[in-house]
Length: 308
Image (cartoon, rainbow, N blue to C red; front, side, top):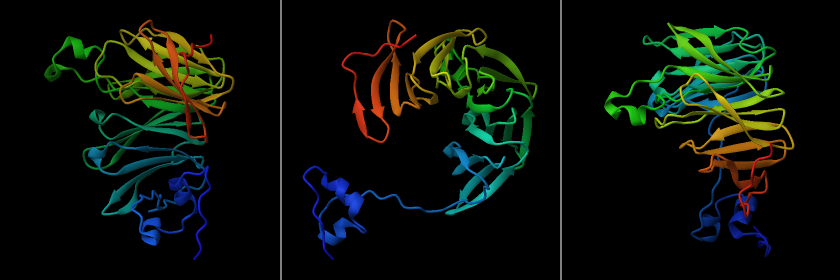
């Protein structure tokens, strides 16, 4: 077969990945790595668009949850290389938009937010069965996102030695089409609304509870159709203050914390992914700006201050 050489402006590895139909190493005898994604399995049980996926903690094995426009939540498990449906939940009246696994310390537990306004909590029991609970009318019109509170209790790093740290109460945060961010708390086996956070002026598209190592402050990020990202903070877990991280020129779809909880990634309708970090003065600054699809990072010469 004939080989077309790469142009001067195209890196060789990019040309190999893009144009070679089989291993370039085998064909040319060159010790160059070739990164190819290979489809290993397709899980075709949904009957509509699949909106979100979530992996459970690896201590439970390879378990994956999916949610769809078809109103279903499916939990999959891999056993000996074979993926099978472990559990299917079909008790929502409209599209299921978000799924999120709880911290592994809480057990194998999944929260699901739906356009019917309800939030379901699916948990595995000791006998291998599945228990379900449903919060009806959690959000008027619909729930778009859900995120769990860390299992580490706030302030435990400085209050108690690691061997005596109390386990955090099970809580999660949701965002909905009613422009609200809500915090839910489990009490005596039932889920109750703990806080209603109001600051957005349009649909809340995503929420993310920041990871914690036990510092006193708890932090939640929310983003909205109104173009704003808001940072919520609490010192005692009951009273929350809000601060606008930035006002973006278009809808903001997703927010995601780094594993250490000190950098927030934001993506939206402006075709950019930006990374934000809080300064020592308590101001949020943009430390990196990536154009979607360009693969190019733009580091601001000076930290970008948020727009109010």
